[in-house]
Length: 225
View 1 (cartoon, rainbow, N blue to C red):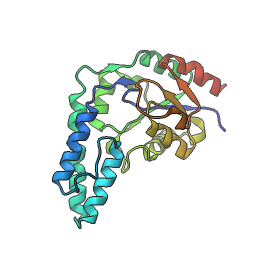
View 2: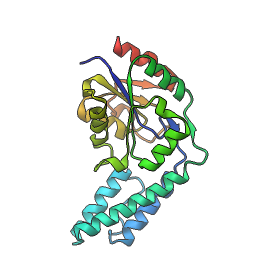
View 3: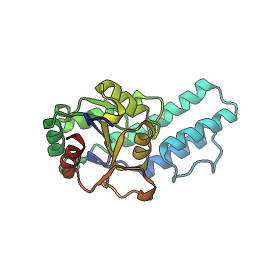
View 4: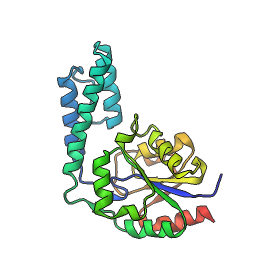
């Protein structure tokens, strides 16, 4: 196990208090895919978005749809998510202690990244809105990868850009997909209880639990020194 050299954050409900209408977005995604040939009943609002996309693509493929048309349908679905995300920018807030925590981590000499299943335009606007570019070295969005979290592609791309190996990084996130993403490539994971999602925490592999962002510098310092 190496010394911690980088901290990578999820964005929504970790660094910011998300205003995204997740329920409305899922309903719109499911309706869109059904209109494009996915069999009704295959998709559920209980599914995470990555699973909705996966099942929808498999269903369209089984229906004999050409790959270019499947790609077109998936891009159309992503545009729906983009609209919901951009609409949510109004009234978005930083999580309490976010700037202070980022500043403290930067002061410890750590590299900082963001990985998010949200789109690039939304992420860029948030970074600009709160001047996060002063702290963040790299960010990887849905538009920068082929696979959504919990596939570790986001995290691997961020680590490559930072020049930090997996065993010298910590990932902070609020959802089980973040935990799985970190576990798959051997990154330490801190579960942040920013929003109480409906999942069993005892089923999530984690190195620590943070009730607030303010505790992270002390928590991570113990991993560094």
